[in-house]
Picture 1 (cartoon, helix red, strand yellow):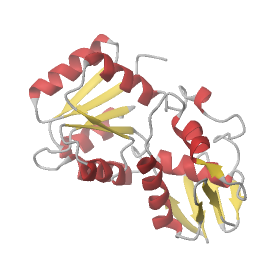
Picture 2 (tube, rainbow, N blue to C red; picture 1 turned 90 degrees about the vertical axis):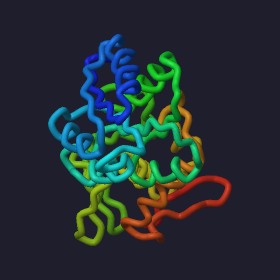
Picture 3 (cartoon, rainbow, N blue to C red; picture 1 turned 90 degrees about the horizontal axis):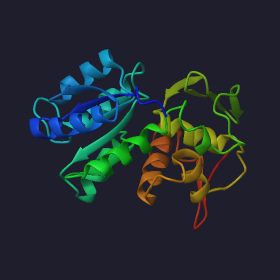
Picture 4 (cartoon, rainbow, N blue to C red; picture 1 turned 180 degrees about the horizontal axis):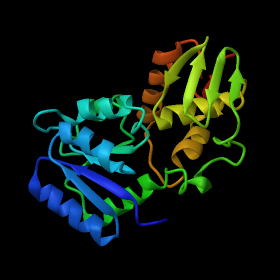
Length: 235
């Protein structure tokens, strides 16, 4: 992995910013900081980070709303986002994933665990995660057509019935995986391994949230749940 990756840290607690900045700079990462949700959006556009560590409760705009706005901006939508929050309630975790976050990390967090988490998250970048992707699924190949859905793997766009839909990276890759063999039932283990990698913990709620968000955009009948097994795309 290249340690020139750029990380944006957004937190209204200066002690947290100092702690994160010190430990990540020591590892060679390029760091930018912000103190509220509005700065998160502004600096994400200018700095173009590979990863954003985002607090939840902040002034001016909270992390949830900032995450949603970043995900809706096509120029920065594919950045990896991890909430780093002292709130560990289930509803906060689910709200974070619903907003489009890739991970939800509770603090306080030890430096070694922080670095391990950051390295794991950055392995998701296209240049770093080739070993985590199933050899039969190549997201850089030509468009995938299945039924009335067209998936443009170069532009990360989805078209259904001629209408364009935009998906954040993980939702897009999950849909592309299911579309790569539309009649195949992909088990949860296959999905986890292909999209998130063996070395990364993903709970059942994570995949359920992503499936639900895909269905919300392009229709409930697009993805079929095979109870006790996994999911498949319906032509």
